[in-house]
Length: 247
Image 1 (cartoon, rainbow, N blue to C red):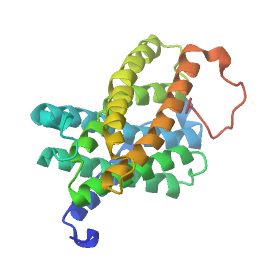
Image 2 (cartoon, one colour):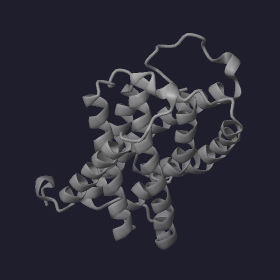
Image 3 (cartoon, rainbow, N blue to C red):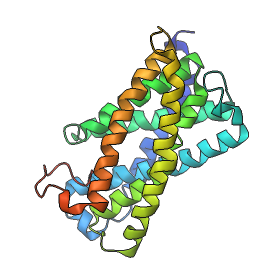
């Protein structure tokens, strides 16, 4: 069926509008004093709140999908469930929303890495949504959202200059463990699986290319995380002012 007539389009539109409505609702919440004083931090705070909500829902949802359909761990190309399909549509809607939010808010230059990530993620999800293959792979990819819960807490505390709190110090160790379990490990497993498509001209080859680019980004982010939280003396003292708290 042509993508323009695909029944998944209402799901994608509904998910995108849901996150837009959530963004509007969360923007009415009071801001921490330190965040409120800076328009850039205020925008980023609201953006992270939406990301936090998405991570909680998608992370738990992905775990439930794997528990309900464990064959997704092995039959990555063919395993399918309605819950998993809806999850991929839901998360694709989030990436559409966040991409639009970044561009409309004129934060594309400061957040270009997020845009690159979102474009690659949407490309992978759309291929699964419109051709109903590799839905299991999409679900496994979304296990990363469990890690993002703690990563987002870290980023929000840094925006609020709360690195001195005990919660931040506890979270940085939990975040490190979750990064290994739900980001590095699934990504390595998926990369290993998709290497079988190398040299072919298939959807799997397309997804392998995206995975390899994401592997590079994830390793760069991991090095930044280690440098910022565990080797702060090695962090450059002067950074571009718009690269706020991405380390």
